[in-house]
Amino acid sequence: GSGGGGGSSSGGGASIEKRVEERAFWVGDKRAIGLQNAGGKNDKDVWVTDENDGYDWFVNTAINQVGGQLKESEGQAQNSQDQNKDKKDKDKDKDKDKDKKGDTIVFALGVNDMAGGAKRYTDKLKELVADNGAWAKARKVLVVSVNPVLESKTQIKNADIEKFNNELKSGLSGSKKL
Image (cartoon, helix red, strand yellow):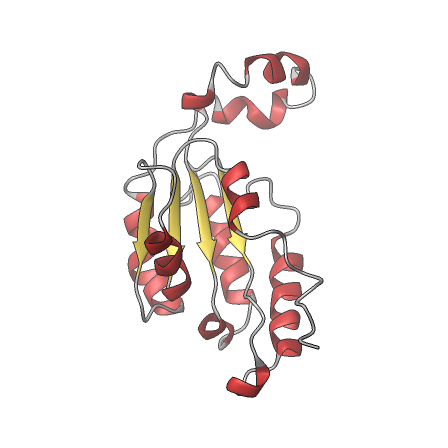
């Protein structure tokens, strides 16, 4: 058998589309370019991609391209304080305020991003969404883990991908926006 790829898959694009309510910034390399070429549903989306990206491209180019175009999220400063208190009211107003939700960033990692380890990405992402960070205006940042590979076609091992993805997940836990 082929192994089926069970386990860490989260349903791919469909689950991401459900989580993006307004405009999305798609940040990544060939994987993001493939998604763009497949045709997205939202003409408002912004694609920040480069075929040969990696950490240097991310910090030297992508961060500023995205940060310069982000719109302020509606009521962002109030969100964490009012979350539980006004949950029923917010649920009622959810559809009415859809255009005011703010931008979402979808950050797609690939196998080439594994070279320097997950920590540099988790540290940088947490810095970006901090109150004074370049991506502070974003409503949320969705981080797409690295996909498994066909090991017979590459030197990369799925065990290494799984380890990287687990380090990414644990490194980002606790952040309200990630």
